[in-house]
Image (cartoon, rainbow, N blue to C red; front, side, top):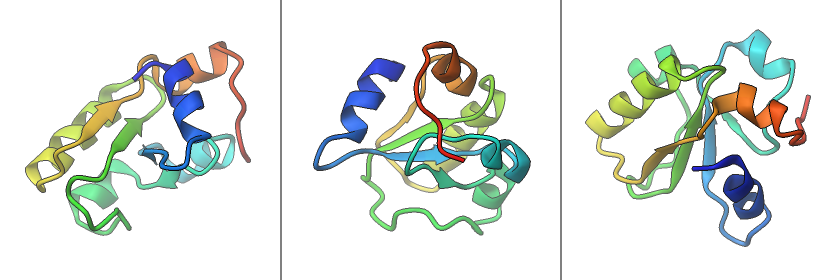
Length: 102
């Protein structure tokens, strides 16, 4: 999902759940408002507080892509059917001048 589309969708009545899989330090330095912090390892070990509905719309992001791709694969293995990646990831979100929450 493009950052402009996500920014627009985050203001809607039914925004997707943004799953930020970066480290705690990275998350604290700035994340998308309303994002769920769920590091990839927590998803892998089923320790993350994820939506219970397996068809919930999820948009996964990390800093540059590899962790998000791994998390997307794990979420798919766990039965989540509506998982997308943020194009450009967090580095692209910042480069586009989009707001961050700290």
